[in-house]
Length: 56
Image (cartoon, rainbow, N blue to C red; front, side):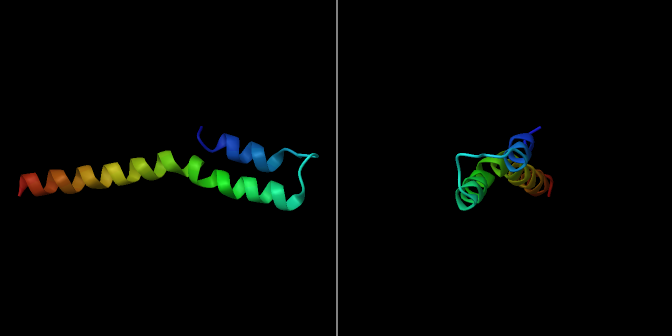
């Protein structure tokens, strides 16, 4: 599952990082994890619009 690394990041203690560093790395990692679902949503939307315009 794509969200597992993100959940593991927030659940795992990182003793060598400050709280701010831990939060910053987690927030910076979010777009990487969200890329595949967002790309799939845009692709499906485009495909539906394209199919509808060809059928009309």
